[in-house]
Image 1 (tube, rainbow, N blue to C red):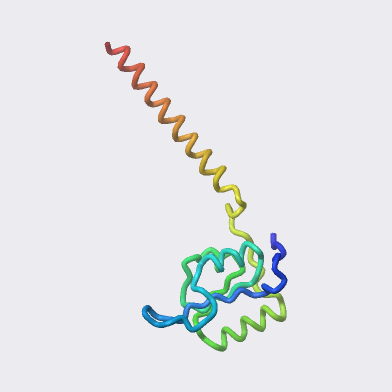
Image 2 (image 1 turned 180 degrees about the horizontal axis):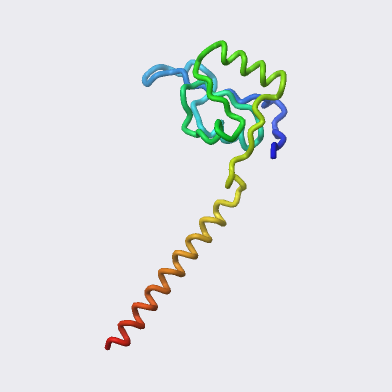
Length: 129
């Protein structure tokens, strides 16, 4: 499901990393996987100008396109976004805002099993005495 972006001025999120360690930042966009995730969650096309991404699921399933710094590919991708709206993608499985509930459920299950093992051990020890 593609969601509407709540910021009308944010049409395309461009994520770039062009500097090497020790060089000053020369672009206005941070090198952040968070931008890729946010753009994907909002259904906003994202163009990552790097050779790789620390958030590969945003490219595999989402709206992110990883292009390196090949100017021809960048221009083609920007044109695609402008003409067709870009890569539609989808919100990846489990990006539904319910992670805390799933984690709590697993923890309750683990805790219950640990308590049951302790109770069994106590019963076995009581029988042995």
